[in-house]
Image (cartoon, rainbow, N blue to C red; front, side, top):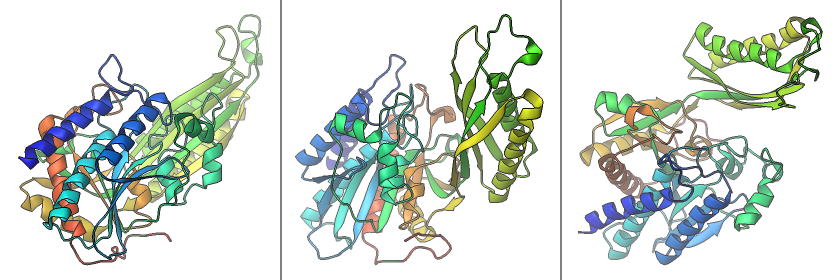
Length: 425
């Protein structure tokens, strides 16, 4: 009976959160720290309070719900994901991980109070990270990056969106400019949709993530000269958009010539003055390079920089990299993953090991503590789209696998992270 109630609550909460920023196409458009994100956070906080969890909000707006077990253990277990979405994104990305963590924590809290669970951790916390997607504020993994001190808090709060609104102002506007200091956890767990089709192709319910591809993210500014598109001779123009187009093609070609799998894109461009009868004066491009091979990333970056150097000769325009973010190839904790694999297999789920190409908050957390990331299938591999879909059956499998995994992790003796996995202090 309790199991059915938990399943129903997971599905009900997923539907409820999907209403915040819902789009006509059936997806969600809920950007970090906007009004709809504030409403989703309000519902999360309400749920925490009504279910006996202490609410903590840190200075970058990460929202935590904490329950302390009746023991003296000085260890904290953290689980969750994010609530923000891409513009016109899907209902499952991020939100599913928060919802399942909420109900798993509630279930384990009840089990501990009954005496059916004997945890070796003193606290269990659920988190909703701020700005994982990087859609409104860059870089991605924003809130978790501040939490693990990869991104300075002062820098993060001063970061602006395309309209010049700072993170500090956006958090204040929705009431989530927190002050709580949250200690680093001793283990982090995250459930996410796969955002690929490997699980479905293999006929498996659960993906056990061993590693994450590295990523290089660049903000490039191309400088030209504004001119009238009518009378200005073609040979006299310094068209920043033409120069930017050379870079777009070059980024695409890098993936074709790489020595290892490489995914590349220019996902966003801003053109100034963006007028139909004016030659572009300035263009900004957001460039991404991703690979599971660190050397291939380095070679691709060098190739892109070489192309930048050719632009003045090719187009008369100059260009510069105004922001460069490196996320190295990451390996997740093997000790915890082995334990989770045994737990989910014992619970009856077919599981397979794989890597992730997309970034997740778990990547930030694995630098400070043992971290486990698992996946459930995504229909046709579609994500960041209203067509993103994971069936109710797969959602419930994700909940049950998370319950089995976290139950196992909570009750094992303390262990150190796999020494082959880097964990920063």
